[in-house]
Image (cartoon, rainbow, N blue to C red):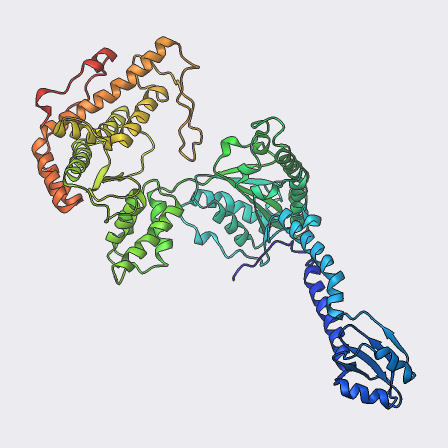
Length: 636
């Protein structure tokens, strides 16, 4: 069943539409005046008017600027005739001779007279109406008199059209929310031992994991009214409006209980108080205070449950998260391999997939993808199959879709010179060969020198084959070695670096600093954390890496020395791998220049001739870093 939304509460009658009634009344009034004029006025030539005047049939003459009119005497009393043009100025003398009443009038059009006083009124009303709509937030606003009314979108039907069966990959979160559904369906049965339904449930997780969809599924399973609103819709320019909207929203929900209130992006409303400029957040803080009061005040037995979603739980006010308000916090995380396979199967039902396509292989190379990302993969794969006029979506289409999402759009019209193509080919082969030589790195699926995305002249596609939650120190060093493999190939073959390794250097430096500052992986500095935790664990944002406020000058120099030592050691290791396999590097670069792309099968042939990678050299001291030089045979 399709779900119908409206900005009005379920039990509230539609507002009277004065803006539509006034034009209708005006039109009726104008039509009435026009009909009266047409029905009572008979235009005649001036000669006819003169004849009526000589015969004494006219009375009550009115002389205008352009016309003259009179009323016929009995037996035709009541009908008016008009001479369309006033011919002679001495008309008054003639009228006196015929003994008829006459008067001088200022002639005007009844329509223009009406507009003379109606137009200013309409202009004032129009300005008031536009200002009212503007202050209310556009076409969906409530008006000046309705600023305090809730803007929640209400699902009028007793279903949202979404069930738990429509959602895959978040089994733990569905199990947590199933209890809420059972409470709403049978509150007496689940409360027989004194238990109460949780007042609030906070869904937290990275973007695109299905938090909003889960909230709608809870309402769909329970079959109750569903009020959906974003946290930012409470805040207006007028102080106190947000608090009034919170009150109105809870009043609507209680009037339509059992019901679910869903607040999306709760961090826009529930940010910790006092975290901003002093005095600059009165409206937001008042709205948050009203929400806290409502959470404390409503009775859970009424059957109203507050669901909220956020991907920034670390910035929420602690008062929101305490027991008695948001009693339950449900993590909606990125799916694992089994979850990704289930999500792919759900979305693959909407497209025609080839019978020999193994979705498990797609799930294996989409580590870290959220549900929204996987839906996009299926859609991009279907578009790729359509572009090639295929009958069904194949595994190659899924691979192309993943490359498009990870690496960006292929730019076939960006032509590189021969020297640049050679530089890019050796750079990308440097990444690929170091990754193939190190057993602890991610699989290399493809190497290409076709420009992709924004500024990428080539790419090496690596995807992990399994979900990893912990990494050893040696595995992190392997990652740094692969990142610096492109710069090492440039140094080995061309004798000098290029600007193409800028992003590689930044990522390798961040990894080395995390190893030293956050993970305590330097023996000389010991197991000490010198940097803050990530700013947002769910979003993967890095934290503040500055250590000036936690260390003295000696420790700071030691940190810099450790970071440089890790990077230099990884670079030397990548250089040694490529120097020992120079023949494989040259052969692979030539094939890449010719074919522009090498897939996993072609790279596997190159990997047969690779020598074993050398061990990670010991951490260099700062003085040795500056004195380290490339071996004499390292240049082409």
